[in-house]
Image (cartoon, rainbow, N blue to C red):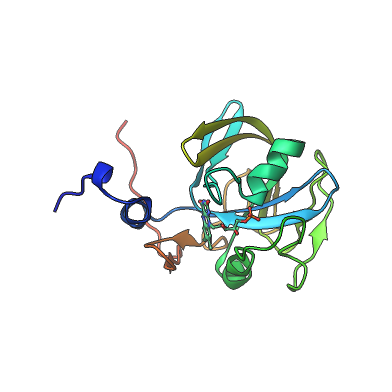
Length: 199
Ligand SMILES: Cc1cc2nc3c(=O)[nH]c(=O)nc-3n(C[C@H](O)[C@H](O)[C@H](O)COP(=O)(O)O)c2cc1C
C-alpha cells in the first residue's frame, strides 16, 4: 500500500503519519497570556533536539487558517512555557486538558491539579507532573497551518526518586506515557530492554 500524501486531505494525512510515527512523547504544556491567565494543553508532535544548548520543539496546528491554538498564541505574547512529561497516573487528567476552551479560560480550573511557581520564568508548573522543564521560546517556524515552536530549556524539575545521586535515571521508576495511533491510543513504557552499541 502506498499513500500519495499530495492527494489526501489533511485529516487523512494526519491519521497516517501520527499512527505510524509512534510511540511519541507527550509534552503537557502550561503557558500564560499577557494578563497572566493560565493555559494547559498536551502536544505529542514533540521531542528534545539537542543539549548544547538544550532545545525542545513541539508543533501546535492552527485552530483554523488564521487562528493559532492558545498555547501558540500565549508563547507569541510572552515567549515562556513549561513542558511537563506525563506518566500513566496523569494520563486522563492530561487528556482532559485537551478540551477546547475559550481563550483565557484555564483547562486546569476544574481539575484536581495544583500549580507551583517556576524559578526562571513566570509561567507556573503543574505540581503533580513527575518532570517539568522551564523553557523560553527560541524561534517559531510557520509552515502552512503548522507552527514548530523551538524552546530553550532553563530548568528541569524531576520528582524525588527518579534519578540517583550520579544523575542517572533509576530503572523502573519513571513511566512516561507514549502516544500511539490516532485518535486516542497510548502505550505504557514499563517493559524496557537494553541494546549496547558497538565500540
Ligand atoms: C495526547 C494529545 C496530544 C496532542 N498533540 C497535539 C499536537 O501535537 N499538536 C496539536 O496541534 N494538537 C495536539 N493535541 C490537541 C490539543 O491538545 C488541543 O487542540 C488543545 O485544545 C489545544 O489547546 P490550546 O488551544 O489551549 O493550546 C493533542 C491532544 C492530545 C490529547
